[in-house]
Amino acid sequence: MKKIAVVLLVFLIVASTNDKANAVDISKLTKEEIEKLPKEELLNLPAIEILSKAMGQKNFDSVFILFMESMLSDLKFYNKLLSGKQSLELDKAIKDFQKSIKSKPTGILLVREFDELTNRIDQLNPKLITASRASVINVDNLVHAQGTWVFENGSLASPIQTSKIHCNKQNMQCMEAVAKISNFDSGSGGQILNLHIDYLDITKWDVNEVVAEESSSLCVAYTLTINLKEKKAFKFRRRKAEVDEMCKGIATKPQILKLVDGFKVGWDFHKKREKKALEVINPEYTKHIEKLKAAFEK
Picture 1 (cartoon, rainbow, N blue to C red):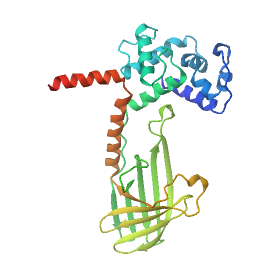
Picture 2: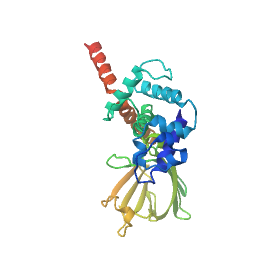
Picture 3: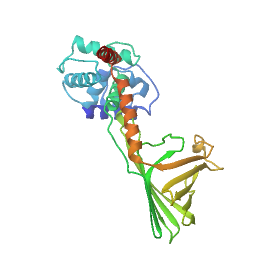
Picture 4: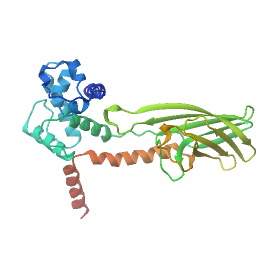
C-alpha cells in the first residue's frame, strides 16, 4: 500500500514542472503523457484512474478500493470489513471524508484528496523519537557537551535534534556534530535526516568556561559558551550584517539557545503530535467518543 502513495508522489513531483492546463481524457493517455500533465490539473483528476495508469496493473480497482477502505477505516470514516469492492458504505465514507476536508462530496476521490488521505494516515500514529540527555564533561584539556538545542523562550526549530560538542584546549578548537530529523507531518514525502559538522575557534578557556566562535554559516554567526561550573551550554546567535538574499527570513534580533535534555524535548514533541493526530480522525467519531466519555463521567 505504501508503494501506491510513493508512486503518486513521484507523479506529483514530475507534474509540478508543468504549468499549462488542458482538458484531458485519462483513458487515452500513456503513463508518460500523464507525467507531463500540469500539477494543478493532475491534482483534480480521479485518483483511481491516475494510479491505475501509474501502477500499470490490470484489475487495479479492487486494490485501490481495498487501500481506501483500510485508510478510511483507520480514520474512523468506515466501519465495515475490508472487501475490495465498491459499496454504499464506502461511498458514504468517501463523501464524509471529503466533507471533513471541505471538498465537494462526490464519492470520487481526486488525487489531491487522496494525497490528503495518505497525509492524515502518516499523522495518525506518530512514532516516539528521542535524543540524548544533556551533559557537560570536563577532563583535563578536553570538554565534551551533548544535548538538544532549544531557543531560550522554549520554541523549537528542530525538535528531533541532537548535538555533540568536543572542545580541545591544545588546538583551541571545538567541533560540533548536529543531527536532526525534519519534514514531519509532510505526508507521503517522509522525513529527512540531516547531519552537519561545524568547527568553532576557541577565544577563551579558563576554570569557569569555554567560549568559541563560529562564523562560517552564510547568514548567521554563533558564540558558544560552555559553563564548566554549572555544566551548561549556551549559544548566542546573531544575523550577519551583510546578508544574502536567502537570509531575509531569519530574525534580525539576536537569539539565545540552550543545550537541554533531548529525551524530554522528544517526549514533549511526541505528546503534541499525538494530540494533533486526533484532529485527522472523523470529527463525527470524535464527537461520539466525547459524548460517551461525558455519559460515563456522570
